[in-house]
Figure 1 (tube, rainbow, N blue to C red):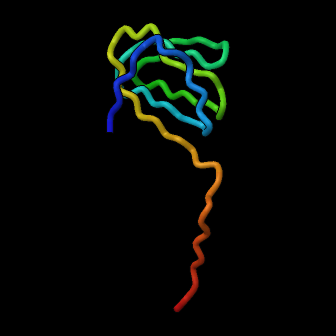
Figure 2: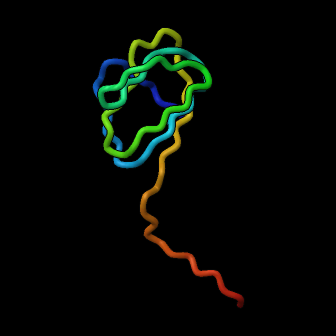
Length: 81
């Protein structure tokens, strides 16, 4: 699955923790009031509800994003039959 990211749309406020791995490309990333450069190999942790966005992209970014799941609503019971 892939998405087109349009720069300058605004900040995201995810409801789950997120981890971004920059597979390739270069740009900048802003989380809350901290702004820094990202490039191939960068790994970024974003806690739930933190304002964040990529911007000033100088080379197209390929990013792997991992979302956490805070609550499981289904319990699995393992027992011998």
